[in-house]
Image (cartoon, rainbow, N blue to C red):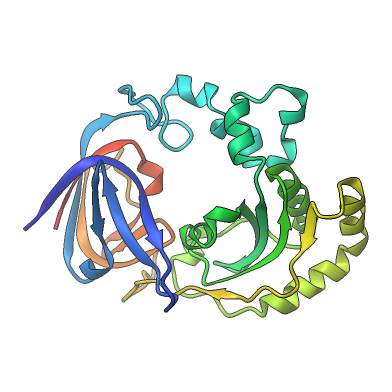
Length: 276
């Protein structure tokens, strides 16, 4: 029997050449590989404290995925424009953290198609490929644009949202593997349907700001799952401080137990003990 404890943050993920996602639980300074724990009994205990991921102050409630209320109101990553980058107001001089915005938002981004619970469009910083796809539980992903800022990626995503979803049905994603999709064919269809809008965006910015990626290869992702649930029941530390069961799989940022599923990212900042 082994015990580990510390402040929970989202699981670390890697994707080796064999396309099999590898996970590690992060509790404070501890990082425990999770794939080899499939089939074993696992207990997670909430220790009754939540600390802000930014300032580490004690908070009774987590805001914006792991922050205290003051930080959620101050940090640029908690602003609505980070969730909806087409609302970026950096050029107006009103960014909450201009230096952070310059370092994060004013960097190359990828607009991609993915298959998690079905076809969807998404965006991510180029250095978050393929982590973002694994975090979403995508089994297929294909980059279709490379752009020079988060704002531009948001404009492209909004354009495509009129033709394809930008959301993942997490319950459907956790019930099994999504039916395969010809992402290259979907890319070509969308580029054709949105041709005039794409040209308008390219004319609005300089020639190299919004670049189509016609030659990218599809990324396939295999998740460590031995059994998917028939019914998806969500487990919650705020209602049940101790969660235990046999680990059946890991997909996205979810642990799949024989008794339910748990979104580890949702409880970032919580002090947790894990017993194997």
